[in-house]
Length: 633
Image (cartoon, rainbow, N blue to C red; front, side, top):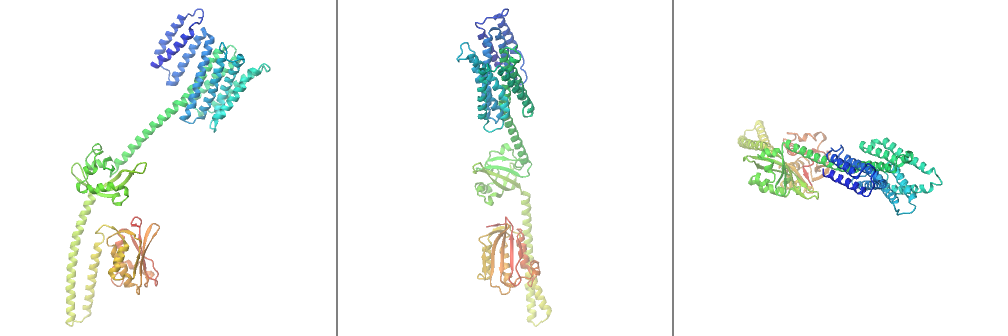
C-alpha cells in the first residue's frame, strides 16, 4: 500500500508541474483534470494488483504513465513528447545497467548484448531530445534531430539481431560496441545525404522494418531457448518498436508523440524481460538452490541419522576432551539415557567404570598415533541403571580441513554375552585341563610303576619278547600323553605379536647348535599363538634328526605378493616328493611323527600355513606363509 501511494504521488506531482502555465483545451478545465486525478487515485488505491507480482506491477505503473502522457498531450504536446523521450532514455539506461550487472550472477551473453545496444539507444535518444529543445545546444538542429532519431531506430533494430548472433562468442562485448558505433555513424549520415537521394529514407525505413520482422521471426524460431514469458515480452517489444520506428512513414496519421508512447511500451517490455531473466531468475535460482541444498542437507542428515539409529552398534563421537558430540539410538538404549541427556557430558567420567577410566583417557589421547591398541579397544560401560556392559570399540580419527585431529568416531559392539560365554568356556577349559592334567599325571605314575615292574622282571631273569613289547607300549603311551599335554596348550592363550628371530636364536641355544643356525629375518614380527617358539624348535630338531649330515640351518624372510614367507633351509638329504605332504600328518615317521603335525596346527590358529618346497638330495626347505595383517616389518 505504501508503494502504491508513493507511485501515485509521483504521477500526480509530474502532471501538476506540467500543467502550470499551460493553456487548457476548451471544455477541459484544470479543476476537471484534478477531479479526474482524484477519481483515479481512489480506484488505484483500492483495486487488486494484476497477477505476476513485480513485473505486472511495473507494467501497470507504465500504463498509468502512458495515460498521464496522453493527458499532458492535451495541454502541452511538446512537453509530453520531451517527457516521453526522457522516460525512454531512463528505461533504456536502466536496461543497460541491469543487463551489465547481471554478469556478476550468471554468464548470459544475450542479456549483455541487449544491454550494450540499449546503452547506445539511451545516448542517441538523449541527443535527439536535446536537439529539439527551444534553443538547440548544437547546430544543424533539424538534420541532427533526424539523424539521432534514425540512428536510435537503427540501433534498436540491430540490437536484437546482434544479441541473437553474438551469444556464446568470446570477447562479444567489444565486438558489439564496435558494430553499434559503426551503425550509429552510418544512420547519422542518412538525413545529410537524403536530399540527393530522396528514396534513401523510405528505403532505410523498409530495411529497419525488415530487421525488426527478422528479429521477431528468429525469436520465434528459437523459442525453445527462452522462457515463455520472456519470449512474449521480447516479441511484444519488437512489435511496438516496429510501429514506433517506421509507422510514421507507413501510417502518417500517427503522430510523433504516439511513436514515443509505443517506444516507451517497447522499452518497458524489454526491461521486464531482462528483470525476469537477469535479476529475478538468478536470485530465485540462488535461493531455490539454497533451499534445495538445505533440503538435501536435511534429507542427508536425516538419512544418516536413520542409518545410525538402525545400526546394532553404538555410534559415538567424542572430542579430544572426551565430551559426547553424537550418539545413536543403540547407545541411548544401552546406557538408558536420551540423546539430550548424553550430548555434552564427559563420556569417561559419566559412563566408564573408575577402574577403566585411565585406560580410556589414554586411548583418546593417543588415537591419532595409529596405535592398534587405540584403534581397537575393549572396556566396560555403566548405564544409568548401574548395569555393566562390555563394549568392543573400533575407533577412527576425526580431522578438520587442516588435517588436525579434532575428535574420535567410535563404533562399539556390545560383547557382554560373548565375553561371559568366553569366560564360562575358559573356566570350563581350565577345569577340563585340570582334570586331564591329573588324569595324565596318574597315568604317567602308573606307567612309571609298570616300567619298574618290567625292569624287576628282567632283573629276575624273566626273558620274553612280551616283556620287551610291554616296554615299547609303555614308552608309546608316555609319548602320546606328552603330546596331548602340548596339544592342549594350543589356543588356551590369545595370539600375540612375536619376533621369530629371537625365538629361533633361543631354540638354537637350547639345542646347542648356535653355530649351525643362522636367522636373517630383519626384525620381522608375526601375530601367532604363543607356542610359535615350539614351531621353530621342532623345525631345528627335525633337521638335526632327519636331515642326515646337516652342517647349516638358515632362516630367511621375503614378502611375496603381500604375504610374508619365512624359509627354513638345511643342507641335509631333503624330503622325497611323495612325502612332502605326508610328513605333516599325525603319526607319520619313525618317532610317532607328531612334530610337524603339531607345527601345522599351531600355525593354523592364525591362518599361517607351512609347506615343504625343497629338492630331494639338496636339503629340506620349509616355507611358512604369513597372510597380510598378520606380520609387521
